[in-house]
Length: 204
Image (cartoon, rainbow, N blue to C red; front, side):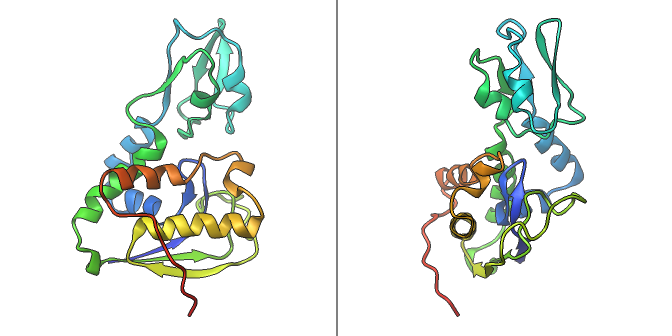
């Protein structure tokens, strides 16, 4: 299988690269839906004090305070977990799994279906945007084109993609646009024994 990915920012995983495309593109519709829903946050009403820190942090305005408690609109929530990070009372927690592991956990069994020699990953680092391509306002061309990279190692290619994007940006591109660290999903897969992130770029 050849996995061709247009790299860009992605609200759910930080980077929309090979891991995201494999984890979302190679599962059925029911699993896609459950994957997103599993990473939605839930509010512990006993701990929540209605401080509105989560409201201010939510990038899609999916949270409001009603009756001094945070309420999440799951039609808007995309499971980025920013509310989880900012809540000082520990009132936010994922329904089932943290977003960084959600798509990685879907990608893992797909990887296990193939031998390493039967997989090739190609990441296109051109027309890089803040948002996923499915958004009409994705803002293509946010960064100058970098090029195209290929590898038989999914962890290495996504790790290299993150590094190259940050180098082109001159800082942490993903943090600057308010996204989670995309290398968290790489960490998760590495801990599951799905390979190593180490890479060496060879220009051809």
